[in-house]
Length: 438
Image (cartoon, rainbow, N blue to C red):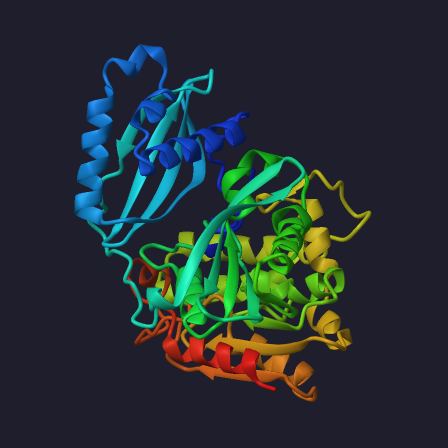
């Protein structure tokens, strides 16, 4: 299978292992930690297989959880987020958020669904997530639940402001690629930042694990953004409508990157949406964007060797072919540039700008960072040109912010995502002001 070089190699899918009993394993993981939090250590021990129970006595579990509480403080949330196969065992990764710090866990399950291991993941030596100053936890609360569609169950968090009635609510949509509910990129968690920042200003949110992270095996067959994004986004919007205290007449969609590109499409499926927030959203065809990204990375590499030039030329040639794929021109299950033809057919036929212009009810907020090397000002200017004539629409360009809307000193490349930062408070304030404008 031939794949594009440079940025495109990391697009959309990873092929992590998958357990056919993942929903059962996730449920057991949740029940195990609920028992630990409630001090029901006998019950917690019952989830282990008989072969290991003697090695994990109740008093050991009790002492372990006591030590965790002493070091990390009270539990804020504990959420199973993904799984991977390791031989005959399924490993479920659980993210723990405590008062004083974060701690991730790995639970190992055998083929019968019984636990055979419980491990605390070591802290990475890399930069750690920084809790933003605007995340005032006294002003909001969080609730764990699942976004469900037929055959799928995605861990989610509803963040709601305290002591506020009839509040607006925002559904957060991921960019390309597998992602957890925080859209974690290195030590950065932009969706977690946005949820906390908006909640502190009286605005709720829904964020959830992206399907491509948890159900990666389903993307070995022909698919489109319907399976990747749309179906779960519609379910998340439906969940937002049911949040206690939320104003059903003020439901907004925040789409980052690919998610922003698809917000006009979702507004057709959910016409009750009040507004769409397009954050670093491509206005051009995906192939045009990928060509621009590859050109940027090629120029930045300053590698004049024939091998690099050949690699770049091959990427451009392949993208040029991809751009011409349309319905009936190729079998949907054919693989082109690492993705099924069905995906490219869908992308090539989608006109996000034209779709946005046809929407009458929803207003738009378009956000763009000047140091974003993945989506450029070209796209921002196209959105401005298309949508500037409509009342209620707003456009914000931030010269010193990158693709994650974090302050940087240069455009750079992907290495910048290894450095911890937070979504700019200015962006949070602008979103809140736009939502609250009369």
